[in-house]
Image (cartoon, rainbow, N blue to C red; front, top):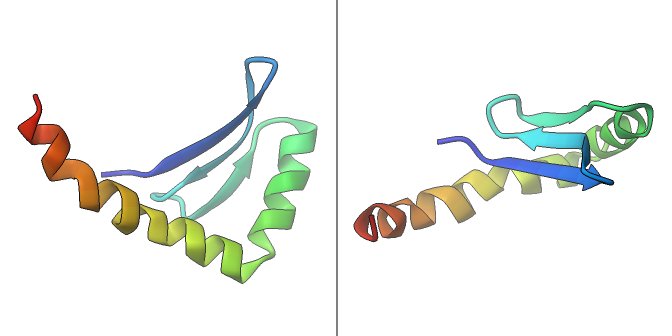
Length: 67
């Protein structure tokens, strides 16, 4: 299971957090700046890393049961 949180503007993805990478990655000039800023905040990173357990692992059984 992988948690991905993507940020878009005008249908263009500019920043993404991936639980497999464990940090934010920027895809545009502005996205790189956002990623550097967010990656420099340990509390933001730990909160995003915890989302895999909070969101994904908590709900995966519900999704499989409804299929």
